Length: 224
Image (cartoon, rainbow, N blue to C red; front, side, top):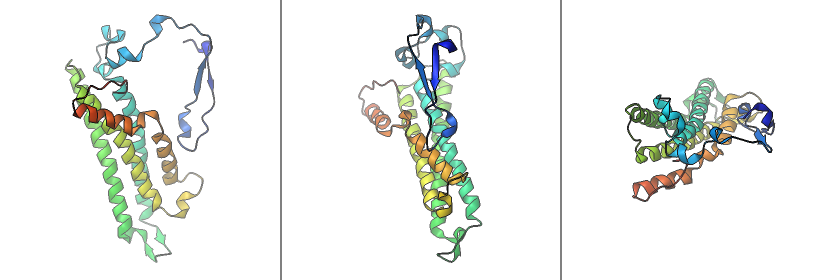
């Protein structure tokens, strides 16, 4: 659409992910010719006009798999950044109430281990799925439904793992971490929970699809 045919309403005033600028795009009484429109049906079925002239395998990947993965990926990155910041601060932090360095607290060490494992597991599954999808597309093969559904399963669970990892660290970061300002862990906590609310991170919907697929029940969902 020409820029003159729509407006952007500045409505993005949130506790987290403030930098995304996810504002509203408003269209009033504008004409959109048919050749500039594309429905979810052809996109989901991987039958779109651009395939006639663009051989790049990237554009033969399922929209839902790519879109939802790009929603989960920055959240895992946020969790990884929170982990690195927390670990760096914990090496020097002293907890007066227990009279010990936090780095010597075995419970803090367990939280670090759990958070690191959640982040690693999320990265491994996200990259594995996209690598396999791209390999199928590169060979010109039909993309298995099972792989597409698995990609959605792992994407929503990557988000859950990212949020869980940040929560583990935030709960043990002390009162200073809750101060308003540029503190990296509390900012990661706000960003991760804000991102969790995105429609692509609906775990029940994605996991039900995977369960149906595993049980041989036909799956009909544009987010697959």
